Length: 358
Ligand code: PMP
Image (cartoon, rainbow, N blue to C red; front, side, top):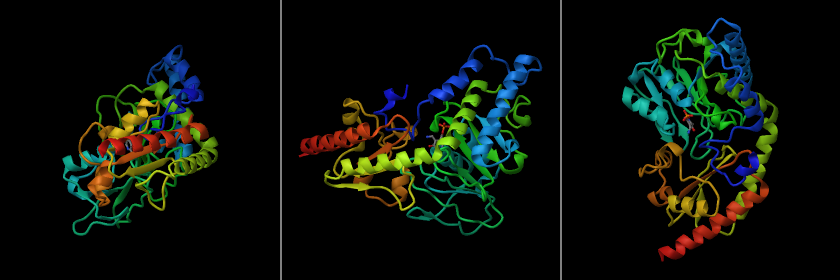
């Protein structure tokens, strides 16, 4: 199954469901189809599977199962946390995913000041919630959240979960999606320290302790739990592999002129963001797609927009650098050979586009 994904280098957008995860999910799409809130045995089997998944997610997060609430993904979890607070009392980093940025804008929240990737505490009025992702989805930069006395801390851990060790010690809320770590799309969770109380975002049923209405996505949740269990076992190996493949990619790009790495001294090895000066990132994406490789020009949720990346813009990069950006994100299925071949495909695509531009 994963062999088909050898040339897929867009794992920050989404990653394939891992074979072991798929196998664990299947019964809950067929004979064990019960509603996890039903009293009969079908319901009880579904409930038991959901609770096992909750404990597996909690174990990867290092928290109690009662602190994990299943959602449709990180977008919902981000919306949910932010809507617990009065807008002007929320402060978020300029590097956040659009689900935080747009919710922040809609609520009238404040953007934290930054110098490079260093985000600092806001001046002035009181802050009740500070929201800073742990690993940026466009560049892989690892971010620190400023400590603000009296404020609760929300971290979007979507690009870190299952890839890098996670420490929730100073974290009150965390958002995540299963499909970034080998689980299915459309399922994720909100971690809430102490298990709430939370004001629901969705009303209409007693699911998830009354905090999140809607019939549970049992197969999806089972897949999320299985992906977390696998990630706990394989974390060290995955990390070593990503570092090795990243090294191969950098080596393959070594002879290409005029490109810059958009990284940071603390960077996830799974993401490599590079800017090819004088070229449009989208053109490179299309060129290498024609050679059978998937990379991206930025976050998937904004790759169809013509707006420049808000992340690279917040770093103060020149418009030329921002325009020429390509994001390569590593995951299962990528091999040393396919990674080297991608580097060479980028090299020839860059040469072709530059020759055309002359
Ligand atoms: N936060 C981050 C950091 C992400 O990378 C993503 C997915 N691109 C999300 C939130 C949203 O995840 P989903 O679309 O699965 O809700």
